[in-house]
Length: 502
Image (cartoon, rainbow, N blue to C red; front, top):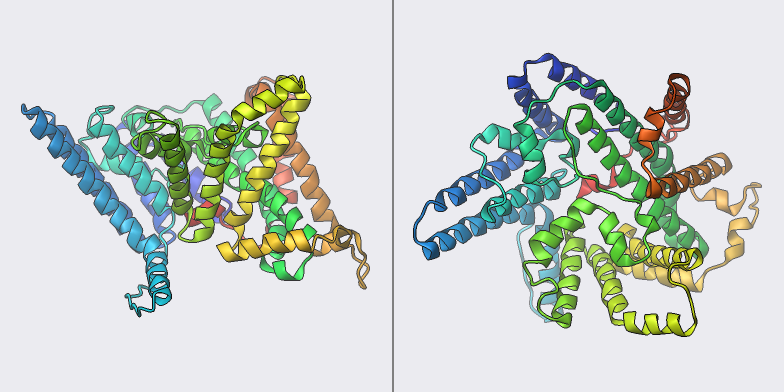
């Protein structure tokens, strides 16, 4: 079940109505049933995996909490570390088998071939369970939070199961912390019309980003990336720039729908995006993009590795290692590792060159606070981030390298404006006709304007404070824009969200 499906448009209102109709004491049970049904709509058998992860981390929390009563400090620490290690080992073993075994075995066989050694490893024909990386990381963060003493272990298995499987953010985040979401599971939630209105408004914006913008632009991006060796290099450049918009609207739209749906039900999820393409550096970008995952890797990998506490070169290594692992988290292929590594490298090089950059600015008397300089930094940051996105979207690392080579050597900028034998402009033969292309451009301007406004002040409170008539005009304009301009129906497939595959 995906958010932009008729099934969800029936499921969510029904779940919400019954949730508020039930007595407070059983509402969390209803959400647990609804969450497991939501997940089992993809494949009922994979409910066993999320249940296994839930039981393992739940028991680890109980066992770690029990060790706090051991008087011997050394013995207490050793046992707590043992339960943490077992929790991580078992959960990551499940994740490795379903997501990384094929990647690992293929590379071992390839290395053996290079060394002249024939290696045969077993092959397993398994499908990647939807959202396995998200709920695994969320469950593991609970283990670590209990170990660090940041929360008490939950004693109710089924309430904890709701924390792991909460359906709005189950398959693509935000990756919630137990300190936030698990606490809310134990709180009463009453029907609040203003909160429901705000949640629905955020969901509406998320649907606009997904079905009007992301899925429309995706038609052009898919066409170019599927036929990259048949198009001019400038087409690859255009598609890569538009992919940056597509993935932002796709994943940002999902996050807004998830946060809005949770808000309707009375839950508050963490913000996952904060106008990332207005960033003035790559480091700032990663404080604004997929915030829940970035902060997860910071808290549970980068800092435990030593962070920036053990010298500059160790900091650089920790940064590169964290981003490489982050890339691998996204997918079991080298193109994702390259994408993550590039983003880490940007920050390392930027930090190394910072003294030179500051001296140059001082020598040229450039005001670092000026709007022009800020705009130039935003453009440069976007170009660097977008270049890395090419590897994220390319089907393989080698294909990504070949696409870059073609983009550089076969640029042919005039090809976009050449009229073909059928009378169509080259730009409009890349998957979108003239009407859809310029509609997409108009939507990008709307998104850019919205992000610039949100950088200074939230938009939702302004809309909700409008008088009744103009407020409802805004609601209906948004709704009809989605219904009229949404990319669905015979000309488009019901596209799943990009991050569902992770």
